[in-house]
Image (cartoon, rainbow, N blue to C red; front, top):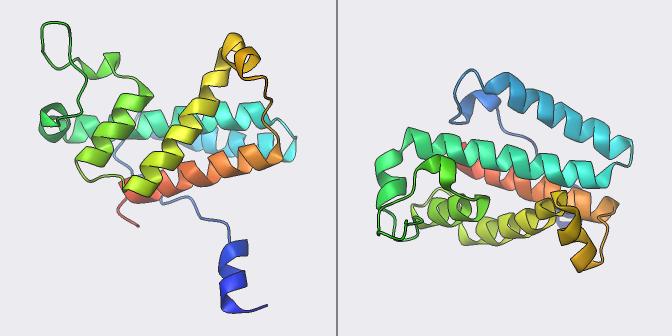
Length: 160
C-alpha cells in the first residue's frame, strides 16, 4: 500500500477539546457526545451518529461566535431580523453558523459544503424531513458525517 492509499484509509482525529472555543461548562457535554458517537457507530445507530455530530458542530460554532461576537455579527452572512438587525446567537440556525464561520475565515469552503451536508442529514431529527427524503442514514452516511464534523472541529481548533 503506497502513501496515497494510506492517507485515504486514515481516519481524521478529533482535536484536543481544550482548543475548542466552548465554555468550560459545555466541555463535559461535548466529550460525552463524542463518546456517544463512537458507541452509536459500533452499535449501528447511524441516525443517532448524524444527529449527535450536528449537535456537536452547532455547539462548537456557537462557542466560536460567542468568543468572537464582533466578527460574527458584522459578517455579511449574519442572519437579520425583519428590521435589519443581526439576530441574537440563540436565534441562529446551524446553517447560519456554518455560513458566517466560513465568511469570517473559521471554516474553509470545503468544510462549509461538507458541514451543510451534515446539517441536511441532521435535520432528519424531524421525522417528516426523513420521510420526505425517503432515506435512512447507513454506516457510510454516519461515517461521512463524523468525518465532516471532525474536519470542522479541526478548523475551529486551528489544526487545519
